[in-house]
Length: 209
Image (cartoon, rainbow, N blue to C red):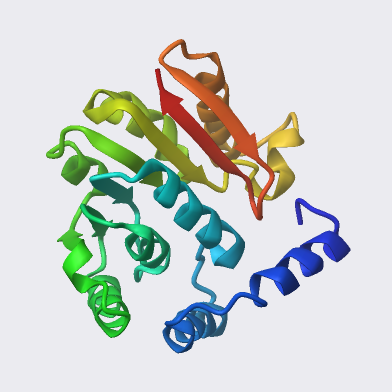
């Protein structure tokens, strides 16, 4: 764990004090993830995504890697207008996302796309929030391909950028090395102002300047 266990438990306890109106659906999504071992951003990151969306008031959010719609739920719930584009290789995941988001009354705020998330994202211009939660080794290549599709002042949010603490190691596997390269690129690039929040497994947030 990135945080001390006691601190993480305290944050988790606070997260569940504030119940959302779709609590039953959200619990179902979280229970499914726990049951099958499906990686989701969790409620701490979800609430952060909601907050950022409220502050940014985006018209277009594109997710590269959506799974069955957990992160999209938080984005869509915070939208006053605009849409969230979900992308995934799995039709089953997208069908589940459709069911969950329909149950939450959010289906009119989303667009479901099957296939390669980066290739799909290339079709969109003026992306206000670009969310990465796909294959970690491809984060750097993905931002190099998609950075010109961001709006001025557009945000990049990337999950798992502390990668279970493996970024601290010197002798690393390819995936960890590519995450470190992505982090270093985002912090050193003159095109972005970047920070990294030690929330859950690390959340990189950058604004296009």
